[in-house]
Image (cartoon, rainbow, N blue to C red):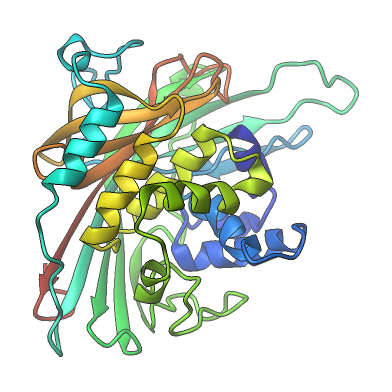
Length: 370
């Protein structure tokens, strides 16, 4: 997954500092797609890579410092006792009796909800409460490439709220908030010398746009009814429901990144966190993720925004992406990233939670209502 980050860090630098709005990402997707061979999965493969990063890893530039935006969300400022930030290096004993396959399949069985049908004038409300990475990396000199990069990393609290109308061709609303929570993750300099992150113009504010086109100047422009856009119901309607067919789809969509189980799982979680996946597809999606090699239960009681679920993930050397699911209801609660044995940055301790998000959705009767 570090390869995924390295590529995306080079694409659309300005858009990265928007903390990953889905419209900002679209420009990165199509720019990156130009380097892939033609084929039916090329666009979705690139969207796979780009959607993965509403958080981003810093770009190392020679003798330069760069601000970096990262992502993952929660609710209250994290503390050392917060279960979302305290991660054991092995599976919690309480969940060792169940495999990840059993947890995910049970969660799929538990999905009984019928997706609400919006009436005219109603809106689907999606709230993402997150902690994401912000920091600085100083690149190594060109004449001393073996030097260790220097820098530091914070976790910053944010919230994104979105209202999607029953008629998606009408105006959508998005609000972004820069919340007070801030946590030091580490650095090659003392915390007292590290500048605290400041909000950029895309970190806050309210934006409206038809079909969710909140950044109309972005290129290529967001198109209404685009079946390759996972803001659009047509995207989900076209996906298979059979678990093995979903695995095959994930493999094809991530082929340009090697289709490793970790990359496939990572993108599978990223699609879930859009908040728009219908219940019938979510059941098959869980079963598909359960089929991937290396998937395991890492923690039995992760609490995000007051909801508790089981953390399931696949680890590689640099990081692990966790899906947080309530096995009793099949509800997707959120996701988090955890530093692996060899983290992206030398100053991050293995096992550190490097970002997380809580996703809630419901139907409301008016735009702006929550």
